[in-house]
Each structure stands twice: as structure tokens, then as C-alpha cells.
Amino acid sequence: MSMKLLTSAVFAGLAAGLIAALLQFSFVTSSLLEGELYEAGEKVHFAVDGTPQSPRGGAEVDLAAEPVRYGLTVAFNIVTYTGFGLLLVALMALAETKKLTKITPRQGLIWGLAGFVAIQLAPAMGQPPVLPGSVGAEIGPRQAWWLATLLSAGLAMWLLAFGRGLWPWLAIPLLLVPQIIGAPVLDTYFGVTPAELAASFAAMSLGYSAAGWAALGFFAAYFYSRQEA
Amino acid sequence: MERDDMTTQTTTQTAAIARAATSTTGIVAAMAAGLLLLFLSGYAQATILHDAAHDQRHAMAFPCH
Image (cartoon, rainbow over all chains, first blue to last red):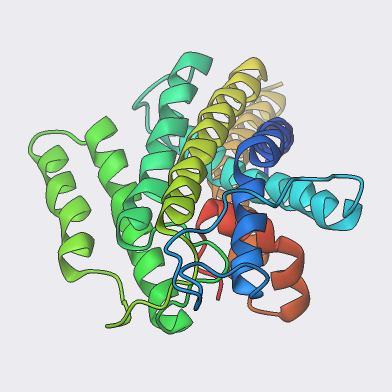
């Protein structure tokens, strides 16, 4: 692997991972913790006493209370974004080698947003981000659908950006077919968490990853275009 | 003299071929490394990895359990 690709991916993964972790603690983790209260049965929605309500809140992010847990969240944000960063700079290098484009930081922002659509948004339409306390279909088929969907959507992004002739039109079936086939789901609802909490968690997760991907694309392109091969 | 020129030319060609090869190899290697990291952070089911990556997997909507 060339040093240029490695260093741009590592710097970009570090920057995007730290930004993402900060956003996660600010906007995502508290609903995750609240979901765990329902998962563990410490809070019960639609309790047996007949009340249709349960009080909002009850779980705050306390970095000092669980330093290992939150430290690992930071670490895995960095690992994940470095992983995606390596794929992103490899594709950027491929696009430049094939003389399809010249990478600039601003263009990197668009690469990042395209990555968000392919890796987060397209799979999330079939398998929304799940709060703890949700029960899903069997893991194997779900992972298979998820992987097939993001590969198909990733190819669609590439064709939209660089396809010639009629190739970009192929993006439409590539984006549609996984959703028409549909992700594996159970035929019953098992959720024990309030619908509002799950919806807010799903929307916040997508926003968090959109910001993370935009940052990753920008920094990957910035470090990539600064270095000579 | 002629021999020197030929040697220089050959060296340049070899270097050019090596550079092109490194670039393709580099791209493939970067992809492989990226996939390995993502397998660990998002896909592997080993309990210790799953627990460590738990919050982040939920936030990234990786299908993890």
C-alpha cells in the first residue's frame, strides 16, 4: 500500500472518528442508554397498571461513570472511519488513475455524502438503526441483505458520478431492487421501547453518520490531494 | 556510452512499470486493509468485539445482533 493512501486514510479516519464520537455523545448515546432501560426492564412502556404513558428521559451520558465504555466508543469510531477512509481513498486513487476526476477537498465532501447514501441511508431504509430492546430477524440474512444493499448502492453512486453513456441510468435499478426485495423482517412487532424514542434514535443516528461521512470525505480528499504520490 | 544509455533507459522503464504496479497494488491493499478494519468494527460476531463496539455499531446501524 502506498504511504499516501495509508496516511490520508489514517488522518482522515482519526479526524472524522473524533468528530463522530463527539456528535454521538451529544446526540445519540442518551437515547441508546434510555433504550437499554426498557431492554433491561427498568422502565416499562404501556405498563400493566394501564397507563399509556411513560416518563421521558432518565438516562444521561456520564463520561466519568463509564470511561471504558465511552473510550471504546471513541476507539471504534476511529477504527470504523479509518476503515471507510481506506476504501474512500482507494476509490479516489482509482478515479484519478483512470483520469475520471481530480480530487479536491470540496469534491471530497460530495464523496463523503455519496458514501453516506450508499453505506448508511440505503441499508437503513430496509433496516433502520435499532435501539437496544428491539428484536430483529436472524442475523445472517440481515447481514447479507445489508452487505448486498450497500454494495449495490455504492456501485450506483460510482455510476452516477463517473458512468458514461447510458450507464448512470443503471443506478436506478441498483438503488431500487434491494428495497423491492426487502430486508428480512419478523412478522410480529416485539419492540418494548416507546415509538418516539426509537424514531428519534433512528433519525439522530442517520444525522450523526451523515456528518461523520461528510467529515471523512472532506478530510480524506484534503490529505490525499495535499500529498504528492 | 551506448551501453550506459541503454542501462539508463531500462532502469527508467523498470521504474515506471514498478510505479504503475505499486499504484494498483496500493489501491487493492488499501481496500483490503479497510475491509479488515470494518470486519472487526462492524461485522465480526465474537462477543468481546461485539461488546466493545456495541454503542458504535448501534449508532452506525451495523446489523450486529
